[in-house]
Amino acid sequence: MARKIFGFGSLVLAIFAFAAMASAEDAKIGSMTLDELKKALGMSVYLQGGYTYNGNAGTVAASGDTEQNDLRVFDHKANSFVLDIAQIVFAKDAAPGNTGYKLKFSAGETAKWIHSRGMSGVDPNLAPPANAQVGPGTDSFDVTEAYVSYNAALGKGLRFDLGKMVTYHGAEVIEAIDNVNYSRSYLFNYAIPFTHTGLKASYAFSDALNASVHVVNGWDNSTDNNKGKTYGLSVGFTPAEVFSTIINLMSGPEQDNNSRDKRNLVDIVATIKPIKKLSLILNGDYGREQNAAAGNTEPAAWSGISCIAKYEIDDKYSVAIRAESFRDPEMVRTSTVRHVKEVTFTPEVKLAGGLILRPEYRHDWSDDKVFDNSTKKSQDTIALGAMYRW
Image (cartoon, rainbow, N blue to C red):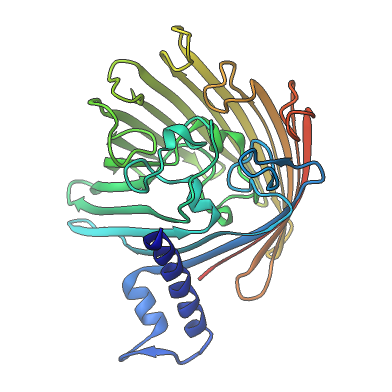
């Protein structure tokens, strides 16, 4: 426990120390200015927090008094101010014929949900990142990415990354600032993994076509839980500025001490820009796993589709809307719901200095009573997210 508190506290203190120094125009460390040091280290700092109001919030069974937004992951806490994530990143891009690296350390509520097995003492196969059967871990510190890169000088550059990396699946990422909504979709929360540990080889055949091959321990596993490896393929195609698509595949055994039963995933993301200010993002997922549902030898399957639209009014204001449907008939991913849908409306305001504010309204509904302690078929939330990257 002391190690976890020290790790969390050290990261937060480091972030605020750099932020304080950044506020001084002529801040120096030795002979280098802070900006020069930041560039040399490939360093960036990210802070995100928010508040989500839910008038009919459920309660956490273990405590009986903590209010929550049911079926939500990163924004699961209701009616409470939350430090979602405090993050510090060090990165160096690997130029052709050279090496690089990336280190990403995360702290806060989000860190509790993205732990990989073997690094935190939390087993994500029993937590929402894998099948959402119980709540998150208690460790608020996470080594989210840690890998070394080598870019072989072959053709346009054959790059290898070895270590722990965030997933290549999905239309969204862990940090809200790089998404268009404040909350995350059900597809990101339940249909796909968060991280992988292993080897990635990538190559850009042209400006329009690139591909990568992955050999990893599995879904959210820093330490493998069986004798089999999980294999993945990602192909990106951008024939024109107005359209791009990524097809992601993954297959491998994910169950404890079971290298026979495979989990397969197909993830497709397409981005369309019909006009300069409008972006449309379509995301579809289909997963299937043998012997995943207790007492059922038939394969369990889950699927979903998400449609996101963002319109940039000007450099300061934009609006976004997301609609999605997620099916989990055998309840192997959510443990509580067979079919759930949501619509999210998110305006955005960019303030001076890089601060971004996102007020958000979201409506979730299901065919079954899975909200507000299993008494309602829907829930409505109003949130305000704030995010800043330096």
